[in-house]
Image (cartoon, rainbow, N blue to C red; front, top):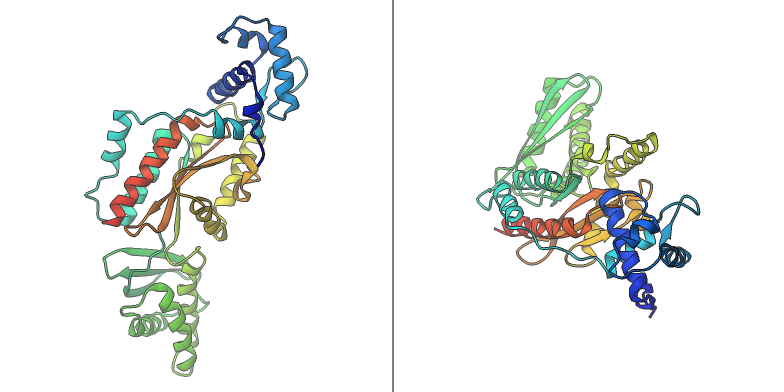
Length: 350
């Protein structure tokens, strides 16, 4: 078992490293030896501090633009700090009240709970928030197709518990009101009591059995309409993202803007939603991923603080998290994400 570099540091090196990382997380700026000497608990020369910083740089924990510049932590340094030196604060009473007020336990609609959780996380942390909604295994009551334009059709899914989900898709060319009615009638004849995953399997079998009876347009409409859900990670799975603008600072460079674009391009790849959930399923409680540590955000170099939320039988059914630059205020964000996940799980378990 490897020994953490922190265990090999003396008290001075550990204090220099901690102060430098804390300063970087707060300001995003490099820190020089002269500034550090004014913050240390012991009186030492700037030259001594420079030697300590050089040692930390050789360990791969610090980096600098050039020899005379101040240092910033590397991704490896941030990982070491989060694992070994991060002091996670408690939620203030005001933050706890704000979370509980925003996500009311009286709310009965799952979508509303998750939308509010997403908005709350973004607002409290001034970062982007991500919430993965649980996939719906609620039995379906009714499906309807509504023509919006010749190129756009809305499929409406009504669950037995009153939830309603909508998807817009491109219908087959030449669709008619008659084919839409035929498609809806056919789907609703086999839908009762089935979940979406069950319905999808049954429908394709039924289409084969009744191919001669069904108009070709109606067949295609059914397949396209049901497939509009299968593009997600699972039936009804939904990734809610809020606060993208929080990641764009006033003095953002084109490189910063490209990094953020890469981040949300990653998020919008539906097949990656399962990857997002798997990140949080690997252990209970909050997990912190820094930069390229996970492939989902490897291009953008962003950090993710994520926690699963559980069903009443302690199964992971979704996740809530915060995405931001690697210099996130981890000590403050970790307890916010943790408490929000616990509250969401408690509400949905009811």
